[in-house]
Length: 471
Ligand SMILES: Nc1ncnc2c1ncn2[C@@H]1O[C@H](COP(=O)(O)OP(=O)(O)O)[C@@H](O)[C@H]1O
Ligand SMILES: O=P(O)(O)O[C@H]1O[C@H](CO)[C@@H](O[C@H]2O[C@H](CO)[C@@H](O)[C@H](O)[C@H]2O)[C@H](O)[C@H]1O
Image (cartoon, rainbow, N blue to C red; front, side, top):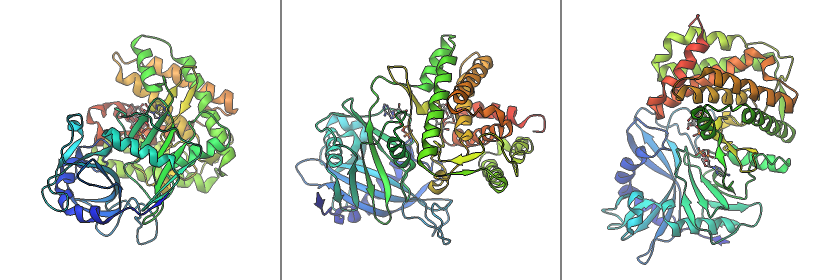
C-alpha cells in the first residue's frame, strides 16, 4: 500500500474545529491536562484515513498539540517536542494527542454519546464530528489498514503476523489512560492518546518479550506509527485474552468474600519474576553501583518536590519521606543489584488472569505522566514489585472494613512467589523496597489528586505510614 493521504482538509479545518475540541477534550478521561484551560491548538500531522464526502462517514487522523494556560510557550512536549538542550519531552509546553475524528452529515442515533459537535464554518460547515472509534465502519477501516502493511501519508502500518479481517468492533468501556477497541474476541487495539517521539515501551517491550519466548505478555500482532515530524508509536494490536479477569477485580472480589488470595498473589509473583528475567535476557542491564543509587535517590527527591508543589497536603510528611530516599543514596546492593528494563507502572489492574488460571501482564507504557525517555531507562526491578505491593494495600484500603492483615498476607505471598521464580527475594533489600514503595505512593497522591480526588485518602494513608514518626 502506498497511498497519499490528503492533509489539505484537516489543516483548513482546524480553526472551525477548535471551539468544539476546546470544550470536548478536557472531558475525556485520557486528557492529561485537566484543570488548565485549553488556549489553542496546532497541527503536528494529519491524514484523511477515509475521505470526507457527502455519501458516508469520513475519518480524520490528527496529531494535535494542545496549548494550555500555565504552560511555557516555545517548549513542546509530545510528538516532535524537544527542549533547547535537545532533550525530549520537556516538562512544559503543549502535549500532543492523537484524535480519530469521524465526520458525517447526519450521524445515526447510535453515535449520540460519541458526538463532539456540529461544525459551523469552514470546509466542513454543516457536518458533525464525533469520536471516530465509536463508529463500527471506521473501526473496521482501521483494522483493514492494520492488515495491510505500508504507508498512508504520515502514518506507517506494520504487522508481525497476518491479521484476521471482518471482525466486529466494540470500544472498551474501561477507565483508561488511552482508548481500546476489541475486534470480535480476537484482538484488542490500543490507541495511544498522548503521544511522544520514539517507540512506545508498550510496543517495544512486548516485542522484545515475544522475541525472547516469554508468553506472559500478549505478543504484538500489528501496530501503526507516525513519522512526521518524528517516528512515534500510535497504536498496537494484540491478541485479546478472552474470558480473562484483571487482578484488581479479582482481589476486590476475594476481599468482599473474605477469601484468601495468597495462592493467586504467589503465582503473580512468579509471573512477574518470569517477565523480569526475560526482559533482562533480551535487553541491556546495568549493575546498581554507588553513582546510580545516588541518582535514584536524587530523582525520587525531585519527584517528591514536584509532588508537594502539586499537592501541598504532602508537606507535613516530606521530612519522613525523604529518609526513605536518603537511605538508598550511595548504597550498594549485595543481592539483585541490577537495573534493567521493567514494566514501570505495575499494579493489579495491569495483570490479567486467564481462564486456565495463568497470569498475564499488560500495559508496558510506564507511568503515563512521566517523560518517555525516563520511562525507557533501565531501573531496578524492585520498582515493579513495589507497585504490586502498593496495589494490595490499595485493595485492602478501598474495602470496608479495612483489612490490613489480608494485604500483608498477599504482599508476603507475592514476594515468596517472586523469590521462588527468580532466586532473588525483594525483602533482602528493605531500603530499596521502602524507597520505591514511597516513590510510588507519592506518584499515586498526584495521580489521584489529578484524576480521582475521592481516592486521595488511599495513598495518603500510605504516605502517613511510610513517613513514620519523622513525618
Ligand atoms: N490482551 C488483552 N486481553 C484482554 N483484555 C485486555 C488486554 N489488554 C488490555 N485489556 C483490557 O483493557 C484494559 C485497558 O488496557 P491498558 O493496556 O491497561 O490500557 P490503558 O493504558 O489505557 O490503561 C485493561 O484493564 C484490560 O481490562
Ligand atoms: O492503568 P493506568 O496506566 O492508567 O495507571 C494509572 O491509573 C491507575 C488507576 O486506574 C493507577 O493505579 C492506582 O489505582 C489502582 C486501583 O484503581 C491501584 O491498584 C494501584 O496500585 C494504584 O497505583 C496508576 O497508578 C496510574 O498510573
